[in-house]
Length: 319
Image (tube, rainbow, N blue to C red; front, side):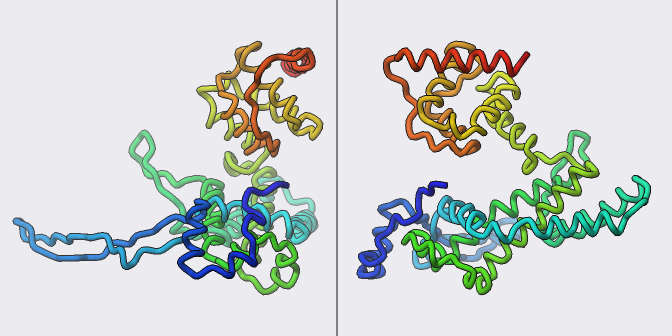
């Protein structure tokens, strides 16, 4: 997998800079975001006898943190580097669950599954972290478990940004730094991997017993998530399923096929309104295509042949 931020800093040159020069250099690369805290400048009484707290920006409390995009990319990198530590917990749980519940009827089995589901969920998320909303009837409604899990997982990008040593080693491109010893000694990395292992168990239990609709992690839910984001620009969820089926084959992740697919769906079949750039972002984000530019100049015979090929594939896919 290609990374945008891995190895972009020259370690030797960067370490020669002063602290102010380092910050300026990182800012010039748009790697930092500024945080300015508020402080209470004055407290007064209003005309009703209540307090008025006048807040001012405190430049003295200005701080700089790495932007979340860097942390999110490092999160993906860590999952890839330490993937050998992910999956065994699920297999062990599945074996124990089947053995311990041999010949139990389905209703009792689902009840046991729910107890495990609740137990493992609260290993990852605190009750106070679950968001509440008001439904159309004015009743309070708790967000889905997988929505909470998705927010918790997404927040790892922020937590990683707070660990400057991890971030700099990644920016320096020091792949050997991320070894077994680091995994054993770094609590954040262990927590990230533990979360993935528990998440796999929760997905397994939910797929087995259908406790709730998973709009975030199952294969079907990813397709639904893409369509929900682009529903005003893509004709139907079937189009997203078609894209997924095509780009799951590495052979079609070359730029020429991306160009042909965009042309086919937008201009010939009128199934999509996405610009070349938006279509590129969709493919890169969800299908790991790594397209750089899908703007098409003049047509070649081979391009037309590729377009015709995808039109035929679409016909087969929908028949």
